[in-house]
Image (cartoon, rainbow, N blue to C red; front, top):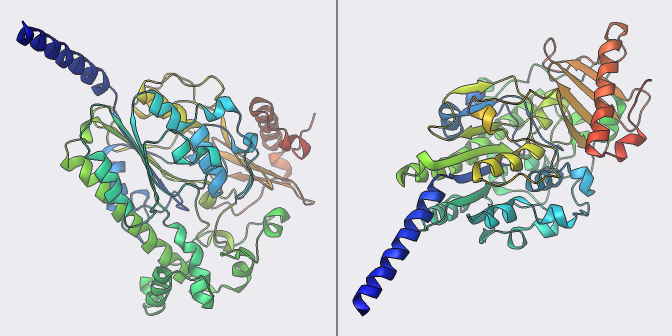
Length: 461
């Protein structure tokens, strides 16, 4: 009798386990990879001939690459707070690094880690955080947190991935590079706080023949009619003193800078490769969604600028890749949909994890679009914000409005002028388009409750 009871209980447990496994097997594992200061053109898959990124290229070749993905704010902390909450960071009081976030309870309780944990995922966060205190991994739903942002991070991710488990896993791999490009000026000036890796790369760059250095980008010149707010916002006391660099760097120094940036990007690509290889080795590729993006870009010598916090493409535009074998078609380049990484990633991951998307969010899931089953209408625009203004990208144009200056607006025709070299805001023939984008901006201010922008946005009745 005891044996029969034991067998009965064992059988019931095995049946429950099988049913649980069957249910969870329908939901994919998720690996969310973030790099830092990595603009959309820094992949060989994007046509960049000056670097090789085989890991990222493999994601693009096996999934979808979105070419029009923009951050909510082109600075580290605001962008990361946005991706973690699905909110525009300014609604939480964050427009720049170091600002104190005001995160309501309903937003905090529905942050990315907590949502995944409540949904039954085993959760891991590794690498750079740069988040509001309540969103730090140990407080926001992650079972395990690993601090290293560089060489040790891939192995920590792999160890978690390979741990036997019944539940699906959710892994955030947040790499610091190619952010170390911030130290290139220090290497050039031999200043304190130098990073040995960047010092060595700078030394290598200076020893190369010119034909092995990337040339200046086609849009190296300053934009005609550039709003004064851009120049006045440049720093002289940051690790990357963009104001000094814009004045001091000659063509050779910029080419050194661009070569170092390529090598740092290749370095982080090799780290990502280890994680992707582990998924394949453990036969997890088929049931793992991999989503890759960056928190913001780097100006990379465009318009004579380094670093971030600009609405130019190199700073606000980021790579965005999704791969889920058997679900997302392979080798798709999506150049029609406008993506907001800050407000779209959380709804997308909720969709794949079987989580109801929180009602307070204004972003959308990209799952149907990624899988080629688009059901909703394409959005008309996406918006990025920072401490000096707002950017609105529509299908063809980019409109920016800034807090200060006699000329506070810019309008660029990205179809005719992809390098953003000509500000059309004062051209008579573009006043109708300017007005329509001012109207879009007012619509966005109301929809997103952007109270700060109300004080400087230009609206013509």
